[in-house]
Image (cartoon, rainbow, N blue to C red; front, side, top):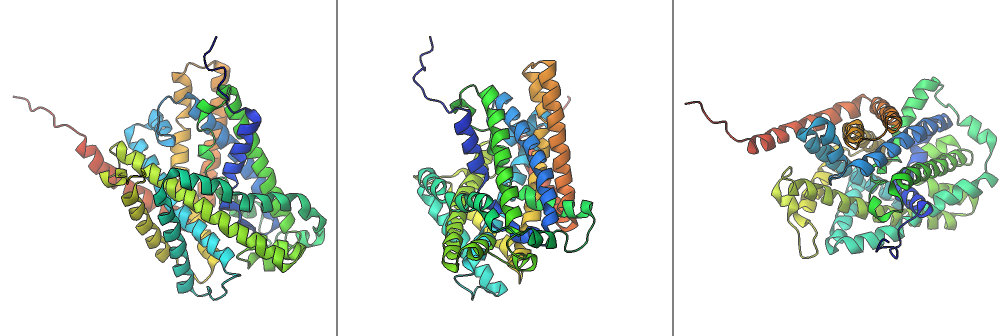
Length: 441
């Protein structure tokens, strides 16, 4: 008889809810305005992305179940591509999270603007973004427990309005408004779908963490992949329903110009006070989400430093176990990026950051997911399990490559430069770890 029969582990339903909640953070709150620039035809992009995201989620769940060492995506990548891919995966993921943090700060500022209309010039928006980044960074100095408690509470500030809109919003839905917004630029269906792919994929970033902590789950080999698929599917339904209904309530031109689309739609449905409450809740959710991602990225860089792949300064911690020095370096990088992406239009700045973040994130995604076949062989799975895993994993990689294409030339060009810079850093690391060969006498 097992001695841990009294230990309560998470079941399929609980894990499914956890996966969905973790995914449905601040990534959605600016998307209705961005997608309105493509048109309601972007609903097709959601369908394609939902299928692709479920393949990605399943692949990461399998990698997490079969990889017996720490390191997450970097460890999966090393299984297939060697030590350099561990570094490149860690490096690009770190860069992606730096970009994502600035994008979330821009989203947050967009929802603050209705309360502070003077935040309308490029310099004022820049100062606002920097202030949000500094505030959330300093708030993390208290340690993981405080960050986790705040993030777990504030995330509901966006989940409740978005999920609520996807249910009750249909009472205000006007089919004619939706049809008028279908394809405002008269683009081809293929071009329109591709234009929306990077935007919709942004909402699912973070999916790589969905299969983590399998030790706390009952029957993880069965329940983790199922929970990931069900949780991702649920998030996809809410995303599709909420962005679809909003395009049938707000005229497309008005929606495309909004910096706080969910606040705007609740103002239309009820009154400006309700809209302001939703807007304020979204601001709080963004702050909580940013707290979490800042802390996550600090841990990513600390783990890489502990492995000897990042400079040692990233591993130094204060009494609360927080890598403050690494966080300050990250803050400097975020401020530099905010300077480089200053734009008169918050939505334009958000879209530029989003496309760059999605491209950079596809590098560790592709490297790590192509490690699944190696992990399956190492664990001597049945031929049927191997065929299913390899097929779904290949579909996930192909979708990720499509996501790279959809990011556009500017993001791919800039992201490629940033990725290649990482190989310069790795050259020094590889040289440091190389022992001189003995000379022949």
